[in-house]
Length: 116
Image (cartoon, rainbow, N blue to C red; front, side, top):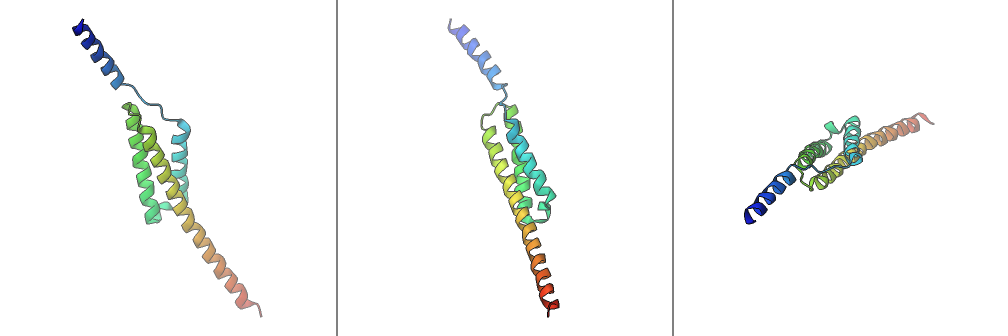
């Protein structure tokens, strides 16, 4: 009896170790969309944004591997990736908006100089 119980537990343990964790597709898509948006806004040329893009990419890959291995923490790692991707997007957007504001201020000054 004891031998059968041990064998059964071993089989259950082996099959449980092969299970995968389902990552919500919308969370993964959201992370990827934020990364694409940051890239389109030129995050690669903003050091802080570039760092967070790399962190998000690495964490998303890690989350996929963890999910494949059945680690339930994969969803948490993906959440961290999402946060870094959104931060990269925000930092890239800030630089873009700041540049536009400077150009607008220069245009305004040029109009003031031309106006008598």
